[in-house]
Image (cartoon, rainbow, N blue to C red; front, top):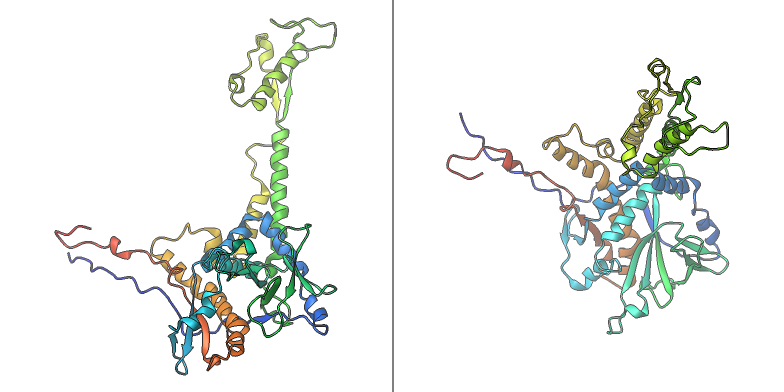
Length: 423
């Protein structure tokens, strides 16, 4: 029988040739007297508040948002230059690379910035990129303070039209941090000033409004919360309503060995001892009485008269359980991600998992990443290059390398090895 030849995994998907992205937009915010009211209407849409609420209530939504965030954290940004109609080459000029290198998290790198972008675009369809100077205490001694680039939600960063300044709420209902707007035409933040960019996915009906995957499943999320609360209510009711113990009234329990006599003629030592034994296992789960049965001596004719009346059948299945699973499946289909990611990969093996990863990036993640690159190019890179007098500034663009995102299984280890070789 012929031996199987080793199969080489195809090369991971890296930088594409500028594919068409989502209909996204990015713009530097410049608030003047004429624009301030129009800009303020974009903030705090009701559906975005609901999306944040379900992010905190439902583990399914939290997991889906993390799927976007963790994938985008591995994206590497690159600066390229157009050398032909569809040809791009990497830029090696250090002075030009600084336009991309300056975009970093407070601690270096871009993982947090890209992750926050993916999470917020998934939940609310928009976010704000805030650029400020690092605090004076973070100065490394060279007198040149680093820039801080952060991706924030519309609730954290707000514009005060009366004071004409930004207000940042790191924690709700606390004193905000105030920042003045950096003058127009200046692309580096100054002391106590900030530059803000708005990134949003355009709504198909009104391009100034944001649209996102969560918007279409909000009612399904509400339905899932209601079903989950119904299941929890049934569980609590079943726990508290363990049934009724019917005891024959003809049996005399007034005198039990070890019981203390009482002056109350209606006192029932047996009931008191029975309740004490049942509660002991709840108060202290480690006590022996939690597993040892209570011993009671009665006449043989009365043994079968004791009955445990159950109000709820313990073998009954919650009717909401099936409805919840159906609701989760509908949410998984409605979100902009492969349903298998949210529902699990129980039906996937090491061969199909490879295909799922490829499809996940190409159909869902790649448009989001490309949208960020295109928006960042149009909103920040080219305007700042133009202001600095860079020649042929319109030929430069920010693109990405997704090699770290695409994961391929090692198919060679599943193949037969030639005789005499070590697998």
